[in-house]
Length: 81
Image (tube, rainbow, N blue to C red; front, side):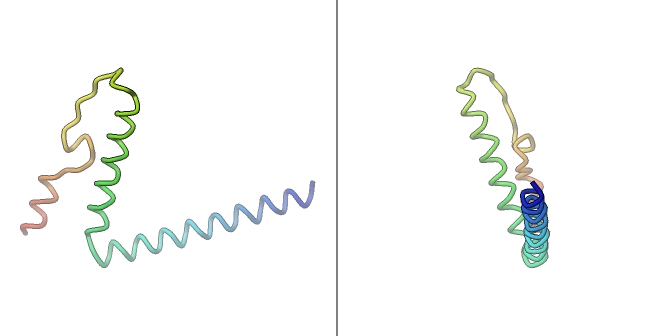
């Protein structure tokens, strides 16, 4: 039991270190280019659309660009300035 607890503790530490490194890399990517944020918005919109599609059309839900998290006009206006 002691060995199992140690392994679980080590796994938790390794997972936390990985998440911290991931956060650092994401922060660096955002500093270098805003495109990363735009890409994440598109990926999130795809995920939402996929979830809605998997529901098989049982429930109808209409979302505009803001509802999908795209905020297309906002991103366009930021790029113009």
